[in-house]
Image (cartoon, rainbow, N blue to C red; front, side, top):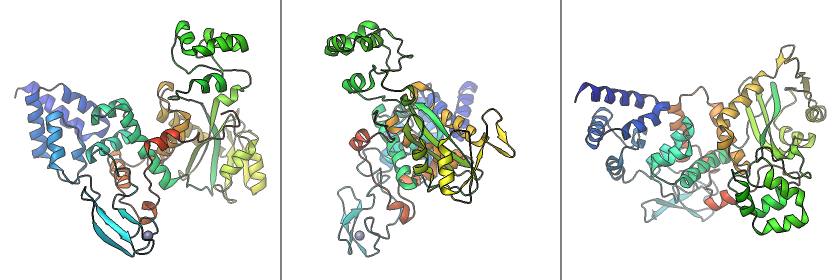
Length: 429
Ligand SMILES: [Zn+2]
């Protein structure tokens, strides 16, 4: 091998060591010839012995190598933890009752008489993806690789990649929910994101309910085409709205008058204290009213806490009713004594970074799922990505305590798609 190739080889191995460059590493593989790929594969095999449990098996090596790895791990889909109690009722009186066709251990509970397999409730249950594909999906989530890239890496459609991602987020949501409580100095504020119905194909929802067209780039002719029969109807019934739909710049379109501009936004209620306890949940369309704030924060902020907010009125009610000390930081002053809103502002910037540019932002329907992932990553921001991948993967495989394990349910694709808006639509949606 000449120097050039050896350098390339070295460079690739360096990428391997740093998981954030993982995608570059994969791209590097594409530039290799078949025989070079074989050499790299052999070299990796000898340098890093592949065992069942090392994360390294998740490497999606080029086509031929892939199949070798996959067939070398026939049992890789099986969870490796032991089951000590019933996944339905928690009873320890369980017995093994043979195996499924796929070789999965089945159990019967002597108390509730229900049976279950060892991967019951896990997202790997009924999944057609193999362990390395799930590992790669986990890595993509932790490192922040886009869905398109993930789909390419694990050789599935973008839709399947999206589904993997949502299932991972949903698992975290079921396990953790919004569990942090605050009993010291806590900063709270609302963060606003444009309401998005991305992926919604219901034309009448856009036209009748929202009074606008979906946010796609369309020429005037294409817009008229999209409206179809509704064009004539609107021409007679609501020519002003029709004009707005056809001629306005899509970006500036704010919809019909009856929907307040405010309600085109979703309010994400956020709170953070100095011990990195975090609350981040989409709560309502438009700004959060005092009762929404009360309902969502009342059980989370204790009476020992000091709540720091801006002048926005909605927090006063909560503090008065729950006798919580309230510090109002004037937005022009940035701080009040030793109190400031710097932590919450930093949190908002992190949310922006996590959600990405407008183009990639999730539909509001899934915003709570994205934010629970954000919450988990933010809580663990001091942990290395490699360890995070391992932890998340163990969670997904159910290698967790019984209390956690019993909260795990496998959400189906249709449940995900038909899930309701996670916010109070304020009668608008
Ligand atoms: Zn039971």
